[in-house]
Every structure is written in C-alpha cells, then in structure tokens.
Length: 234
Ligand code: PGA
Image (cartoon, rainbow, N blue to C red):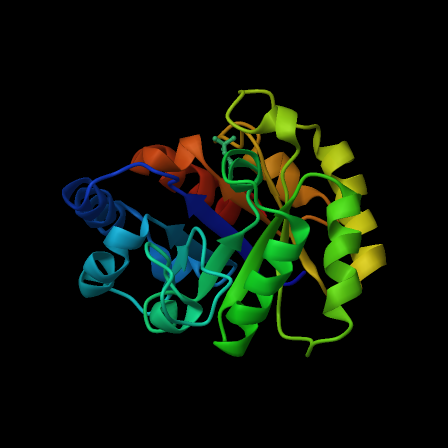
C-alpha cells in the first residue's frame, strides 16, 4: 500500500488567529512523527494563512496546500494568486472543487490550465471530480504533458457538506474507474462527509488512498481523531 494522503480543506473558514490556534493544538496533541510513517497530512487553509502557518511549522512532515490557483502565469489579473507565488508556501493545490465549478463557473478547461500551472511550478494538484466524465476531460490533456504527480479526489456532489457520505464500496468502484482512465499509479482519495466514524472504512478499500476532509477538519480534535484512528487501525 502506498502512503495515504489526508487533506484538511478548511474552505473559507478561519481567521489567522483561529488558524494559528488550530495548528498549535494540533502540534500539542497529534503524534505527527508516528502518523507520518503511514500518512501524509496536508492542511489547506485560505491563502491569507499560508505564510502565517508556515512560520508556525514545527515539523517538516506536515504539508500545506492551497484551495485554488490562477490559470494565468502572472500579470494584470486582480485578485488572482499564481502558482509561482504559491510555490514556496504550499506543496499541494486543490483544483476544480465542485464549489468552484458551481459558484465561479469553473470548467474542465480552466482546471486543465490550472493543472498545467501547478505542474510547471512543482505543485501537486489535488483535482476534485464528481464523475468519471471530468476525469476523462483531464486525461485527454494529461497525455500531452509530463507525468508529474497528480492526485484525484472523488467527491460526489450529494455527499459534500451533507452528512451523507457515499458508501465505501461505491467510492472504491469510482476510484477504480479513475485508475482505469489515468493509470493504476494515480492516487485517488475520497471526500464528502468524512468523519471519525466512517474514515477508516474508506481507506480500507483497495483503490482509495486517502481522504479530503471538509467540515470535520475545522475542529482540530475531530481531525486528530480521524488521522489517529486510521493510523491505529491500518
Ligand atoms: P465535507 O467537505 O467534508 O464538509 O463534506 C468535503 C469537501 O468539500 O472537500
């Protein structure tokens, strides 16, 4: 089994002081050295907190991710943040989240351009998809570029923020479908109402190698329970 990736997607939550409090508590309670043997833990705060949290970084084993990036390289794009600007602050970037597709009209083509920006700047994209059509759109591009690491997060629309997670069996089937399209070495993670009760069942599935956790990651103790349970039971 390859190393699991468990990412906390804070979405548009937490001021800098709340973010610092979360990380300080995480540092006090989580045995990250131990956990890191099996799990890469990635925290994805808002852009405003990335450098603040970097300063608090207590261990090189914890990674940060951004929640989006510009599809443009640089220049007159007010409000945008480029992959080059993120490069020293994050290792991962969540792309194409269904909330971005829904509220900001993001298309598969936008996502492809963003993947390209990430890969040029050695950032690993975590590309969110809610069906295999979106994977195929990405795959048609992926063959043209280098095979830089990319993570796919399967997040069914009904499961996001609803408290109704998909079944681990369904999620595993979709994860297998992703691997059939993009290659079996593609890391596929599951997201959508993951909590401390269901987290282990997802990562026990053969084709699921991690989780993208929204709501349950906002509470540091809940997030710690998720990663420590997985570490203990797997
Ligand atoms: P949720 O969000 O865990 O609150 O369902 C997951 C996500 O949208 O990434």
